[in-house]
Length: 184
Image (cartoon, rainbow, N blue to C red; front, side):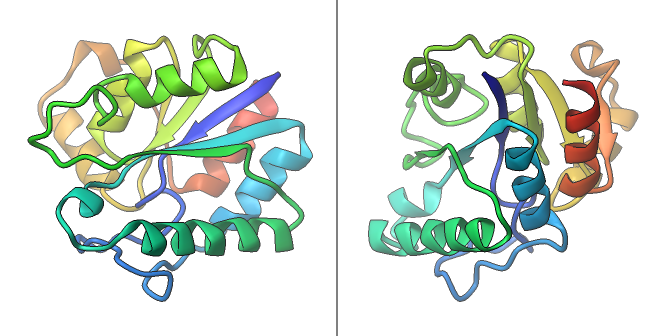
């Protein structure tokens, strides 16, 4: 099985620093839906791993989150693709859970669900915490410059981190997906 793990906010949908609280606010980044569809069409199982602290903080409820994910799923299906699963951490930053990235709990759950090791699987994110979660499980971390990605890249350039010396950075999910299709 060919699997790819994607973060959501800032990778697939726009995230302008504000918490996305409804399906109406959830807007895809240009090309991201088509990129997911292309990955699916090339035989990849596309899985999301996303922190959603807005649940714990009371900014939105489970029905709102499910409506956002239903919108995403519908758009991907309209483009000829499918999502394999959506895994989310509902906890806040102070909850000390194991599923909030950079901890590996979401990836552990993906491994269990699909009976697969995450080692060598591409993981696409826009934040250091996404990349750290992936590295802790042996994923191949890929940074997109959308969302918080450019700021993340700038911070890694300003303060180099050995773990990310060979980090792959892409303009957006569409260019990352093309690399994944050609190399995995």
